[in-house]
Length: 228
Ligand SMILES: C[S@@+](CC[C@H](N)C(=O)[O-])C[C@H]1O[C@@H](n2cnc3c(N)ncnc32)[C@H](O)[C@@H]1O
Image 1: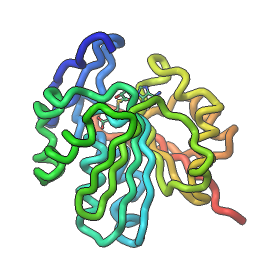
Image 2 (image 1 turned 180 degrees about the vertical axis):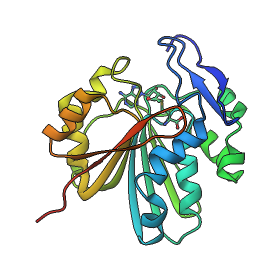
Image 3 (image 1 turned 30 degrees about the vertical axis):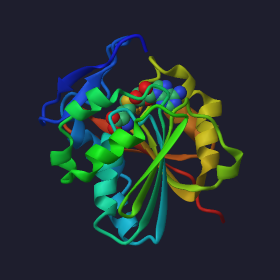
């Protein structure tokens, strides 16, 4: 990117960012923290799933501000689960910008501030552990990894919209995401466009529309069917 994203205060008071090139915000301006919880924690039922798992593996497309990672880590911290959180991000934000974000009051912790500063240091791949969560930031565009087929329990599909990041919504990318999930695994996203739903179905997902957070009528949950 040529310049830094701009800081935006969303309707619930939590910060989000605006991409300087497309103008797209990283979250719904009606409430960044509320949207993150609704789309990526409540709808895929992560509270119950993290509570009942020994190990739970998440793949995120688009680390951005780290808000999803932070809120999901906060849920994991209440349980004994070992959470593996791998996130792709080709344009990590600067540490100076990260430190301006006010997300700790939604994640109810301060540990992430210094840990995510470490995670965001320039490198191809960085790792930090916060209690029972191991975060890995892959500072590159999403690429398939043949060692991680049938690997993840859940995918946080938080790429920019199909209009601004078309390659991440192409059928072959969605097929790669499907292949990375375990049977019975899920993918959640804010995007409900008809063409994207058709592509998800075509690669094998069972696609469900669910009510959205304030300001967004519907969101999407896609399931990789269980092995019969
Ligand atoms: C909607 S924002 C993600 C918001 C983020 N999940 C958060 O909690 O702040 C989309 C992100 O996808 C990143 N991105 C762009 N191209 C990508 C790619 N090819 N693979 C993975 N992420 C990408 C962008 O740089 C941006 O940070």
